Image 1 (tube, protein in one colour):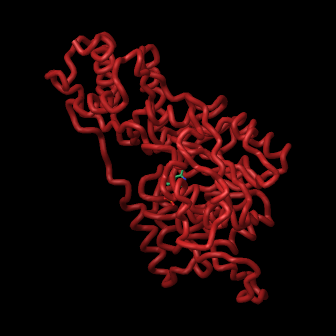
Image 2: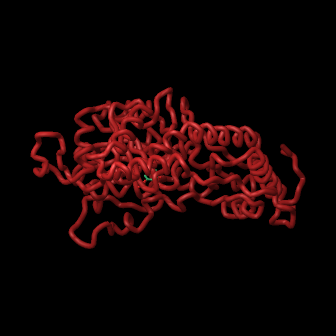
Image 3: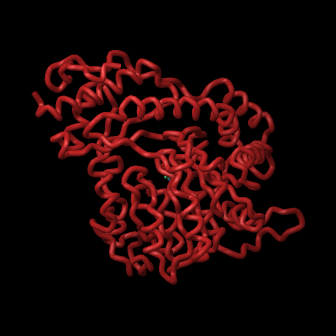
Length: 413
Ligand SMILES: Cc1ncc(COP(=O)(O)O)c(C=O)c1O
């Protein structure tokens, strides 16, 4: 690896560091087709009558070490089902992180609850336990921990806080399939862990989600929460719903694809771990760049790779750095989600609903709430990770990051 490369970067007229296209592959194949055919041949696609959803749930429970798994139609739906199952109600406060997908927050708002944003740690980009504790009030009911980029939150500290304050701990594992924390799979540490199977996650069935728990009562409520509160246990009057729940059912078709994908998860995770580990080791002594730092005891599964630039050292900002990387042929994006979620209009204008008021109107959402998260996004540059990336992709990616950093640091000469 040419750490001392004197090559001119592409933005200054040099040849791009990336000489071959990134490795790619089609993620669905014969295994998925076979599973789909079995589901079709069974002649029924309804989860309660078929066996694909049940089998997928059994396997995901086994994989995570949780006792129960309940499928849902999306990751968002699984988080909403978790909120419903735990009885989250209007006015309750849920502490969560400001760097996440709306799928973490929509369920809170639909329950009439109030998202309260705690700040993140500067290098792991996940919830700061200290900030979480500072935001607890008598209305707080739960902490929603976002395991961003395939890295776990500091679950030991978060669990301790939740136990001391009698709060539920929900793990948003949408980006963290296969991630382990002190030997346990994420999702199995809190009261409920929620996963996404959307098109972009480690494994996918197009759209889908699943919630895991080891509490039998919670598992029962999770099932009801995904199925209009219809109790399908034999002998129960199932059309007598006792609480409000949506239709978040997964079909046999989705579960068929997800089952085939589960067979591939170990290989996917191994390859992504290789990429994250090797890229970090190649970049570790590079000045002007801060590398992503996994939680202590965590073996992350690298849903993406976000480094941070030090503008004062490099003499450029994240937009300029990402543009230079793009010119090298890298798929670099500055600022990840752009702004902290609390700066979105739905929060700043309290515009979740047209009329009628919502308890979150009592909370003032504005820029400046979480300074560290804002700085992370300001200086962050995201690089995609794929299990299809090759050795040459690794060398050329590292070379481009070095080349561009050196050029900026030398005053673009
Ligand atoms: C952290 C996080 N939570 C929740 C979700 C929502 O998942 P889904 O798109 O399956 O509803 C996503 C999806 O991108 C996510 O990244």
